[in-house]
Image (cartoon, rainbow, N blue to C red; front, side, top):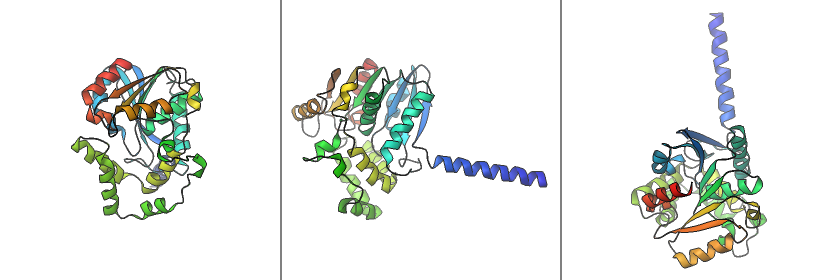
Length: 279
């Protein structure tokens, strides 16, 4: 009986330590396939499932590392500031697993993250950036200064206080412009509803504070940018991208004609074939 009690205490202690460590983990990662490594960074609120159609094919030839960030999907939230912890732990993961020569593929927030990591250190062989900017906050606010973005604001407090029905209504309106694929639009809404509310609010402030417009000048590896043309058309999109990336010397800008922000949902065949040609 004494031995059984000792074993039980050991198991309880192990479970406690595991739960404690999981609460501080900035992401979960799923590894699928064998071959040269590809790192897939999703956009804000999205899980690794956003890449499932492409990974089903690419994992036949590549080792795919699929990230889901803390506070999204089923991943436990972490303390704030959120984004710096994500960036640090992803960098640690890359180094611990000798992935410095991988190709990084990032959508939206995930694309900004890939750029930020590559600007800090000579990581990766290539970058494939999917509808992501160097400073999203600068596009949203005419007099943008990252230090002016704070957690405490009337709008943030309003979103934090929303009941489930009101939040879903907001999510539905936001998702309308993100993809023309109705089934996938429902998936985006579901991810937004699943997100930890504080991460949704404060994590987004962290994201908007990131400004890489000058820092990307340090990136020397090839960068492919896949950009949506909707809702404003290619001319306006091109002007935005060329302004945001003017300090990046080695990049190719490719437009996904007729696609909205989730290019992988609006033009899945085009997206997969383009990935294959650029990896």
